[in-house]
Image (cartoon, rainbow, N blue to C red):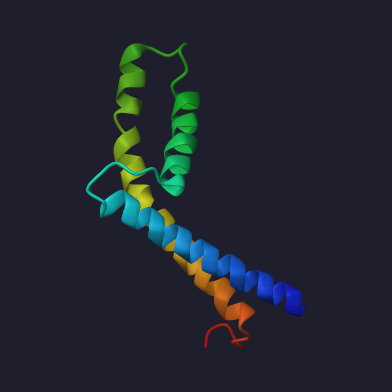
Length: 103
């Protein structure tokens, strides 16, 4: 059980750090810098949109749907970062032995 708590603490720290670094790279840096979290979100949502917009569909339909791609991803980026931070801190709190979790 102790090894699991240590693993949860380390994973939580990595998750929080990844979210904060990704947010800083994406929003704060004045130059282009790759963020693995943002790239993963863009790529995976593009796959979802590509499934909806198959080449069999009309151009007008594909154009209407793909117009929502960038706004949806940009709105999901902060949601993704906040979710990562919340899950990371949950792992840290559980791993450090804070009981009950609501404390």
